[in-house]
Image 1 (tube, helix red, strand yellow):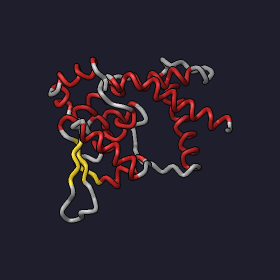
Image 2 (cartoon, helix red, strand yellow):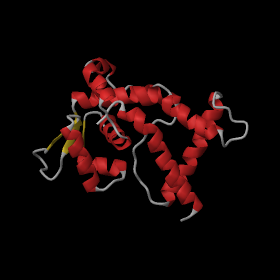
Image 3 (cartoon, one colour):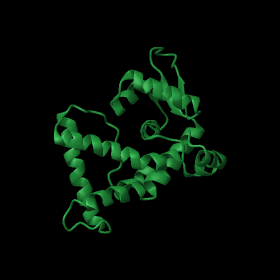
Image 4 (cartoon, rainbow, N blue to C red):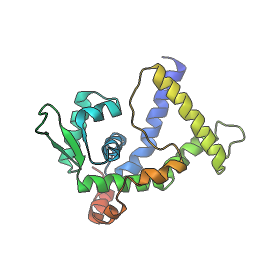
Length: 195
């Protein structure tokens, strides 16, 4: 194995490790968060085949993930009458609530950005995690590097997360904030039992 490959692999596992607890509190995993987010940003419904391309995963993987989300009552799949080979996917009200709440807890709270800023602060000379401009600059540099690696390795997943605070305002517009008050019991159940 090459040192950079190993480093990227360990960084990936590190991000999953530190996000696992935060996302489990709202009953999600990182992969489920990505899938729900991809459906939500499609506005209403999207084809299952589109989700596969957006996430850069196999047909079987997206099918398995959607099946588990259907069992949880977070998504609904239907077959459109005009093309019975396709499946349309949409979030249920519970699914819209779940991703909106997870987004608020994970991203809007600043938790994810603080985690990235803290990790980058150790490597960049003169970088202080409380300096917003330095944080944005370091994050942008990392995104460019990761983009070059992904392109070189032919990873063409297109899921587009906001890259900084300036994009969060418009990203939040995708979410129905009033849904956050609709399922308070659901939140408390997941805090007691994250499965």
